[in-house]
Length: 427
Image 1: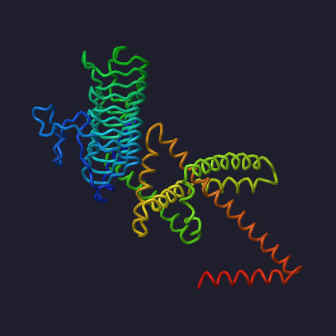
Image 2: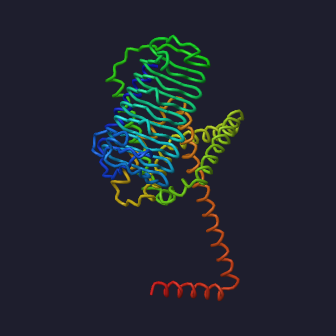
Image 3: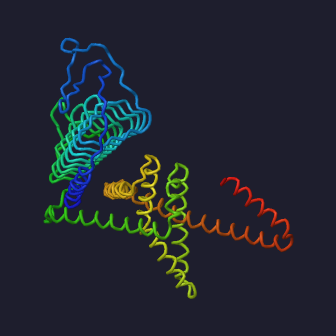
């Protein structure tokens, strides 16, 4: 488990290095809180002036509502808006004081959720240090150090993976913790509380009672392995470089061999099309596996069975890259950038994010499976529709030839009329 933890920490450092090389200029509006108290607008100053006596502005102001998803890329970010959608924050120092009617996804170095923050759905955060004082439904946090205060509360589940986790908040359902140093505050009157089950792994077992955890407590001791942090970082860097290289090779091959496929990839990520691609990928995997294995038990069909299984393995191996390419072209279509270097940069970021999400405990395997099925479904769907289109074109060509033999004058008139219409359009 310690090996896995140090790998995650290494991943964080690698991802932060990648993010820190990207500079996006954005405007981060600052508003007052709903109570009318003034929030400091000086960068780096998080002081709040409470009450009317010290406030220079006693007029309550209603924060602006951002309709739709919010994307912010900057070095220092203060998210204090009301967002009716999801929020994506990528930066160095990030502070969340607003309310989100959806989920929030954060990649940063120092991340802070204030007491005023409220996330209707889930928090997904990957950082070096995370401080939680707010409220949300679910928490998925991966960091070197996580501090969860007494004012913080997760209505549903908590899933934390860190080197140090200081827990003094509340969890409405179950908590899953993997931390080398897991500090569960048990002070009377201000103790942390888990209403469901607590499953954790740590270097030492905690002495907890029903006053702290109302459900079952499952403990697994850490097995310390003698592997250096340097070797783990190097391993993760090599892994992400290999993943990037493989994705770019598939991308360049598609540019060379299948440019029409790239032109259609963005259409495969429409809401309905994604579900269709996932279903096709899942069905293709089941059918190909069943048919391939069944043929291996026959005498004549053994070569065909091996060929089907080999083809399935090949398509699954490129499925992740195909999904990343499709997401890249969808983002390219949405934001309208046409320069090649932005396409390559976006593809690299998408590959790294999906690679990182696949390492998430519990959810990582599900994410990896879904990504593979979507990518496989996109390839199979494209090949199937391409063959159908070819058959329709050939069928039309044959019908035209037959008609030309039977009634050449009529066909010649149609072709002449078509040429005239084309010429008029050109003029």
